[in-house]
Length: 124
Image (tube, rainbow, N blue to C red; front, side, top):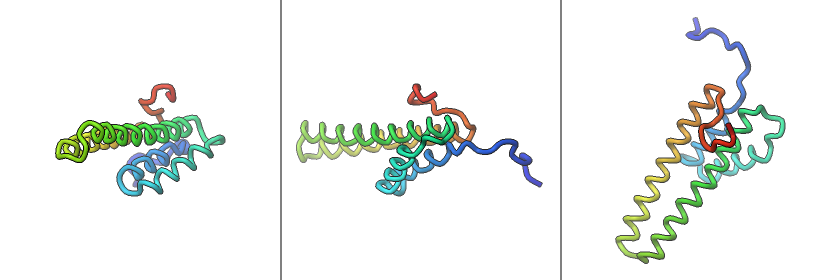
């Protein structure tokens, strides 16, 4: 006997891009981003919720990469190849990476509930 009974409506498919976003961050960085790019380029016929999650995950992947690499670059310019550079770069990368993973977990909860992502707000 199923816990929640049978589904009353079909899934929007919004979970797929969020799962690929998390795979991009946690397990398959290049492959995950390639799939996100493919999803981003091929979402014309998708539901509104799925399109919102595809756009949000694609843009958050770009924003995350830019923030992490630019922050590490700034630390390199400030400190050169010193202990301060490595300490700052590692802390910066870990904090931002963790923040983007947490955003992905919240976006996954939103996608499972067929709701738009909280951030970026223009995709709500």
